[in-house]
Image 1 (tube, rainbow, N blue to C red):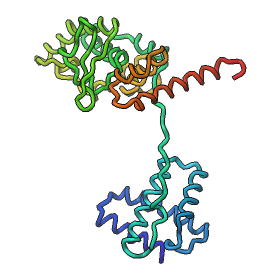
Image 2 (cartoon, rainbow, N blue to C red; image 1 turned 45 degrees about the horizontal axis):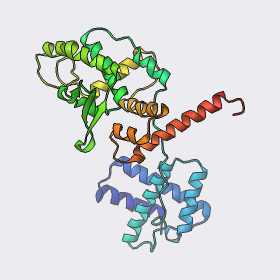
Image 3 (cartoon, rainbow, N blue to C red; image 1 turned 180 degrees about the horizontal axis):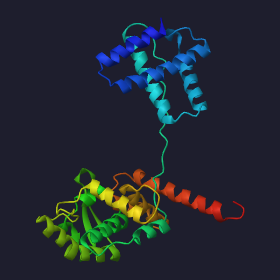
Length: 299
């Protein structure tokens, strides 16, 4: 069986029957061609002669060449689909990639701010006007409660209970949870609600109960919040990109670093499974490891 012809027919199948995009077809083609090169190196005469052992050897070679796990997984999937097509067309009798396990994805540790970095952000200069009040509150609330940006976007005045110092948050799946806020957030909330927020509403001649308001008086969107956080980063002269989830990661990491138990942090974050929260223990361990290597004389 001619490899080039088989690939050409498969590309036609992807374009016409599967309606794949040109970019997807290109990725499939490159993945399959890399296996063709491997076959040539190994003396495998045609696609029908490749076996499970050959597929495993191909993957081992990819690991040796330092391919990312995600790239290896994609190549396996591409070749699995290619061989499934060839089997359907009666051109091969087996799919050597069918039983091949996909490599586990690399677990990336969440990025966060160290306490000194977070303090520098919180000490940024904010003007006393309504926009400055709002921006300072947004930063403080995201860090001090660990809420998601979508939860901050939907936060309303009736969700804030000053008597016990908690906010009611509607998380994923409309699940409710109460989160305490500290004295810094309490002071900023009172100032903003009684002053800055009122000014923004009057300016836009709007009337609604959303906590965060844009300069036109309407509810502040998640995109608007991201722009605000990036502006704060620029003003603090911190040359890094910030995304709202970094503040959530920072909240969890600082809680655990200062002795909070995992179950409490899980509840505050609104995680259904403890495994979602446990990633932050890896962050704290990495922090301890770096501290040890930096300061212990025999590290």
